[in-house]
Image (cartoon, rainbow, N blue to C red):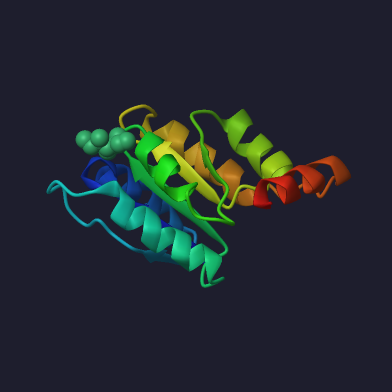
Length: 142
Ligand code: RB5
């Protein structure tokens, strides 16, 4: 199950990604925002982080204009490793090396097609489980 959340700036991109999820039977929970009226990104970051931390959802996707506000908000939650990605290489690397559990996207930064490739890479890449990476993640939690 994938948790999704966005602010007003991310609604269009979230809907684009949701279409892909629907077409491919990928289960998700959409925590809003649902229209383009102005709202506050920390509200949705909190919802998605709680869904991931409670294991209701295995991963999350957060979208705002730049992705920066969402990633700052998400990374305040202990146990969340949120990666703001603007390219496919980073999306794969953050899964392999950081075991990132939330992807942040900037809807005003990445085009829809690239964003979808980033999402696919993030969701399909496993954590490497390498000793060095495990140790570093443990250090993050201390
Ligand atoms: C909203 O205008 C914008 O500030 C927000 O979507 C995000 O980019 C914040 O980091």
